[in-house]
Length: 437
Ligand SMILES: C[S@@+](CC[C@H](N)C(=O)[O-])C[C@H]1O[C@@H](n2cnc3c(N)ncnc32)[C@H](O)[C@@H]1O
Image (cartoon, rainbow, N blue to C red; front, side, top):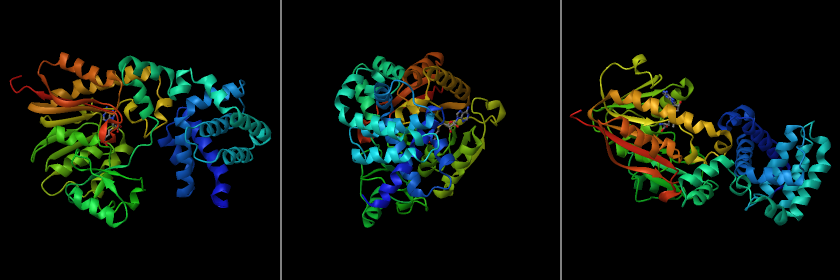
């Protein structure tokens, strides 16, 4: 490691501690990172993000070790957060830096904050004790579910109940760093052509048998390093999310509704495959703006198709629907995002147990509001990036019971995180509206 990299680490630790503090206060990293990092350069931002991701993946263990090392909560909160980040990194199965570097840089980081400066000696003593007694301290805390699995206890209990066979593997999956998955724009060219372009730039990727436009990068690179990204050759999208367009089976000329469309990943995929008339809705104006940006980058819709983006509440068709039925409806519903925790390690700490039932109620309202808008013979695809059955199989079964005119078609159902090719956790149910209904 160079001297300048060493000099910067204490700042990155402080920044990561601030980010972890925001998450513990209930703010997502997606909101906290841009807010705190305005004015930082890309390297500082990337380093703080990477360290905060590692710390959040080890936060359950770190809290338990902190309590074992110092049962009384350290004040101010900025000191506690710094200690948690240092403990999470030092006790990680693969520590990102040598232990002695982490300890000295964490101590050095205390000087960056007026409220933590005086605690340098204490932080040094606690972290050195952790180094010397690491195994014994870990043995003492790992009986606890939160410390063992680095997820809230209620989350572990729910998974254990829903997946008696797979729950532990699912929690282990959540600790992995996900691969960078790409979707080649079928309007741009073939997957083989893009793979050749990547290789010409000394980048490499694997082409899984399915989904057909997917590539898994051998190593993650920033999108601006992906050839043709700015010109719409590819998008970043997990393989599980790439299944929706094929399931919907959109054909030229169809009227298609994407009811929860922002930032437009699945809407764009639909338009890459068919010259249809797409209406993309999202109730969040800032997020809806990103749909237009994405379609513009991907040069969509192509001649022959059309796309309209509207800020609207899908659950209130009376406020936006023109009365003409849709041939296809995609409901990629708001959900707990419990299937994508490896990409967003803050999610597990932000969710509360009551959120799952509240989200399931919103999903049910959306399903019931949108079904009457589907033409007889049409298809509705219900999707969530969740692993909780209330938002997946349970929700779909309830819907089928309420709607005798809904015929369940073949669909992946629950995709467990890590299912080849390295997929996120996802749920898909597909319904056709009986033409004789
Ligand atoms: C899972 S995300 C959609 C991701 C998107 N389909 C994609 O592939 O890029 C869910 C979206 O639903 C939106 N949403 C939630 N409730 C909504 C509602 N009642 N009406 C419209 N949009 C809603 C959220 O703002 C969020 O952008």
